[in-house]
Image: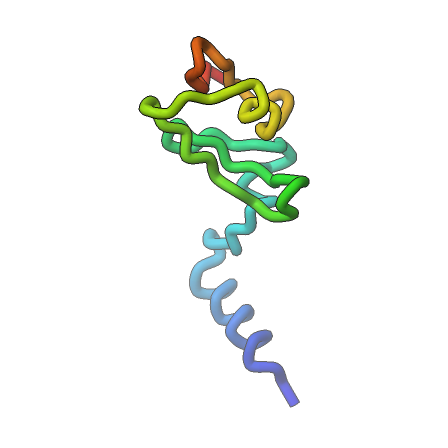
Length: 87
């Protein structure tokens, strides 16, 4: 018996070979974060899942907040504000 998911995959590849499944691993492409719309997408070891920040100019942040972000992410803590800098 042929699996319908397998058939769907074949049809999709024949009709739209330029479209591929978008997984976070594929989107991050070996990096540990991605800047999107002035927010960070990354895998949180603490939570065990992918997350996106909700950094707001109206909120005050601490060094503990900064420490929750990937170590090499282009984010600085300046006078209580998390600022995403140029990559």
